[in-house]
Length: 627
Ligand code: F6R
Image (cartoon, rainbow, N blue to C red; front, side, top):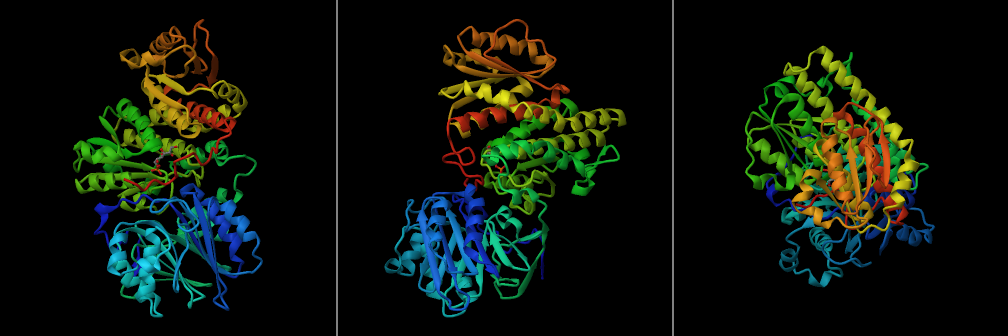
């Protein structure tokens, strides 16, 4: 049986998908020494969680197991492993984000019970019941749900790994990616998953699995998304898949076209800066295959013109930054297409009794393609008959598989928790989609399409112009280091741009920042503006400029210290500002590209100068699979 990307054996517990954990797991079996390889891969997965880390390695000849784990980061684990000179070529690793059981050496994975070594990503909801049912209390040393699973596996293990796995997963409620070694099977790593992702790849040197393709690093040029409820065996020279009746299964291989993973942070101190700087190229790459002979063409994505032409309403479901990209698309859809468009927080979508039918086009926007709120909102909309296009960065991810059609952004891997190039490539994909909609609905003729594309083509260069002036933005950032609160104000598209700018600043600098529709300030919030309150304003929209300037004057007269990011050909009149940064001019609706780059840099430098961990802000993980 060939497993297509949409193949799922069981969806029955979909409604219970409350996966909170964002841990990272890896496994390798091959010719190479495994310890450094696993540590390097775990470091790439630290965005998924970084409160403890661990490795279990096995000597393929003797079956001797080494288990090393600790509370702390992968770099702490690396120190422990440095003492070990023995070479193993088979092992599993884990970087944890604690949910069940606090942060401690004991709760770190892998867990060992009897013959079983296990790492786990996900949450087993019924672990307390399982403890009682199998009377496991004496077997357990930690407070984790994972150790309970290891103990159940060990109970069922009588020398047949498949049988033990099959019997165990029947009892598990919740989400899981389980990666298992049995001490008497020294040459094989086993894995099985429900919802929580596992991808795998192979090359001449061995086989590897991970929670995310970024951790496969330079292992291979292709990878597979392991289907749910399929037992995977990782041998030194091949990957085998079996369904729960032990029938062999095949999975499609997907190209890895993410060369940038291989360079790490390059010359930059943080991934975030590297990713900000990569944006012009990422925008060009996202555009490239979708412009054919000077026209927008989505046929390579398989998005049929009919759904763009026939839909009567458009609705975005997305979270955080991705949702902010949706807001920009809304402005475009309403102005270019004259169509009403809803943009919903995916987490609120189902509770708002959304008006969805077969004439609705739902756009699900997500970098990771794994955000559970977005996934569930998309499913809900599809059940109501909506057609869907997902705008996704990670190939083969859950949302991509769930959607009718997918437009992949070509951002490459985004490692920093704060999204930058994923956002702007989402914008690029959405601009192209709206452009095509305008064409097939007869709103654009060839000349207007050309003018639209001409502007869009300039976006990467205009963004580059901002990036080239990063030192000027760094100077502005220095003035904000002591701020406790800040505001970002603007109207219309500027407001949408600033919602994203404010999210960036708060999540990585911990400065409480509110983006506010500047006309709304006077209805209450202006009470919070006092002497020297930092206020950031963008002024990029011709029709809003005068009103925005007047709102700026309102906060200035209450003592605010205002930094303005202004379209270069706008006249700011004579007012005094704390700082002014001129954004390279484009047609108004495209100003989001240069303005976003400027606001990303602002947040980046504030965070960096405050000495914070820019790439891994507190309390946040990159992939949010909690409802
Ligand atoms: C903020 C950020 C988040 C994500 C959100 C959705 O910088 O990255 O707000 O945008 O968690 O994630 P994806 O796009 O993976 O669905």
